[in-house]
Length: 124
Image (cartoon, rainbow, N blue to C red; front, side, top):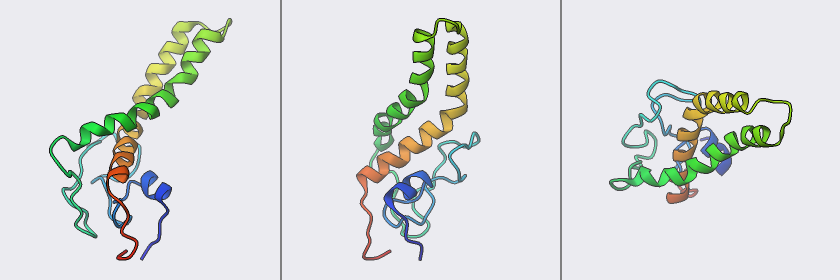
């Protein structure tokens, strides 16, 4: 039995109920193949991941702050720097968005499901 903290469970993309099963079929934050492919249930505790139809639309609320945290430094660089061309900063923003796209989507989903389902510490 592995005891994980809430933060570790979110970052390692684990089931919120048992904190052991994987949320995604392909493990890791930076998976470009099958980014959002998830099993229907947790392999350990059988928790259903899509609680209701449209459940994952709410993950947009948790993905957006992650996107902002990634992109704001480039925006500030473009606005406040007198020596760096704003188009260069814009290009860096695009590259960062493409590179961090899987992280934003997967971490946003992990946060969203951890908000919705509580850890069952008595069982796991």
